[in-house]
Each structure stands twice: as C-alpha cells, then as structure tokens.
Image (cartoon, rainbow, N blue to C red):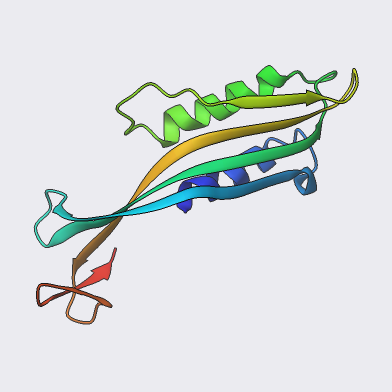
Amino acid sequence: MIKIAALHAFIEALNLVDSGQIFSDVDDLEIKPAARTNGTPGQLIMTEKHYTASFYIERYPHGDKGEDVLFDNVSAWLIENDPGRTEPLSFPVVVDVLDDKVADIEFRIPFIELSTVQEDVDGPVTLDGVTYGYL
C-alpha cells in the first residue's frame, strides 16, 4: 500500500504533532483481479487494490494551529499524488475536541492502487503460460 505509507510520511513531515501521535491503518482491503493491458506492450495491470486509509492523530493542537493547516496540506497532497481519480474526492472526518487546545482527529480516504507486471522469463507470476515480473 504505497499511497497510505506516502501520505503518512507526508503528515509526519508537516511536524504539526509528534510522529508518535499519528497512526494509520488499511481498512476494507479488496483485491480485484484485472489482467488487462495498460497500453504498453508486454505489460499488464494484474490486480487493483481498493482500500480505505484510516488516519488517527492524537492531541492535535487545534487551539494553536487550527485544523485547516492539516486538511489543506492533506488536500494538496491528494491533488498532487493521486491525480487519477475520476470522481471528486471527499472524505469523512471526526474531530473529538478534548479541550480548547487539543483534539483527536480521525479521517478515512479511499485509495485504488494498481499492480502492474511486465513480461519477464524470471518473474514470479505466470498467467496463460507467460511469466511476468514487477516493474
């Protein structure tokens, strides 16, 4: 799951909270066999991985930084790093205000990642007698 890992690292790099306060999980993972061409000779999209990336941030300093800093940066990351979406993205957010200084924040983002393979006689995947390796 490349996208959840990259977004997690991006959120940590914002330095809005200590990295020990940021958690992420893959939920609702669904594998869809595809085995369809991606337009490049010898390559196939072998599977689609559909999942929800769940993020939890403990004790976010909303009294000091405001949630907009977090959500504007996450939105910018999504626009730059997940441009293949065909539908406009919205994602649910839960903000549990603990006091006037900190809140726990939870949000979930749906992702689709493609697993692409290329013909390779030494590859680990075989389909219809053709062996494929990973790019």
